[in-house]
Length: 60
Image (cartoon, rainbow, N blue to C red; front, top):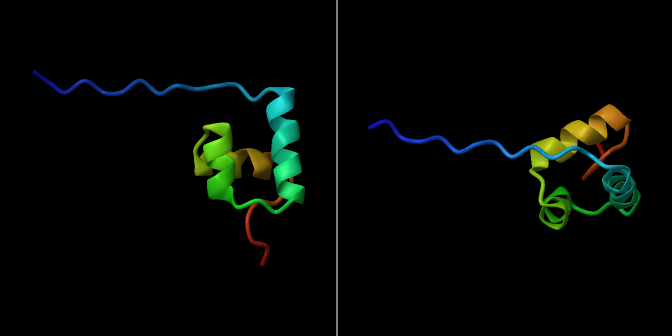
């Protein structure tokens, strides 16, 4: 029997999620901590921040 694959659970970004992401960006909260608090992956946070035009994590 073939292995069953895990279904990807996708959650839409709410206005409250975006507001929280912007607040964490201004506070310079590390991305790993934001990921744990929001229960989202680091790449998904980076992708959303990029689409919003805000920075996450360290600034070069």
